[in-house]
Image (tube, rainbow, N blue to C red; front, side, top):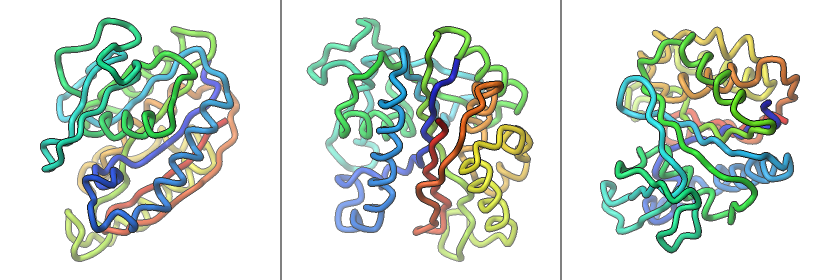
Length: 243
């Protein structure tokens, strides 16, 4: 059963070492993410599953203790998904594959807040994964433990301004507004109904992870709260909690 979820953006710029001089620009987003993780801890889950976009199609599982890195972004910074931070993952079965960037950002957030409230597993979800498979994945996740929490990583559109990674698209602001409304209201039906083709065209990396959340939340009757909604770099960043 899903007892709580936190939705956070996943730009590597969320990590101050990567953002460098621009770090203050996402200070409010970081603070909101910290608050969202507090909601997860307060729910006292038996298991935390971190879901984020990944380049591969389908699904990739990353056990607790899997390593990630921001070296690809020019920063000598390594992270680990759970474990004690000294090379010893909690499950003793860390993957040889590195975490995708979205899960590396999640690992950084969890390390930053000192997460020790439940065992962790990571799940990278390929952007092309169709909605029904995402929804079924969410159902499968919550069937594996009595009290499951989700940390769901993903960005909204990347087309909000002329300088955005995807340039300006007039469809981006309405799409992001509906995403923020649906995630802030824990509107399961609306999240399930997000248009996968439009999300792809708008470079919204969060669509598949959000629909995993929608599948996991079926019947859980959770309430939502929107903690942050902005597009400081022309990319929509949303922080929300379901509890």
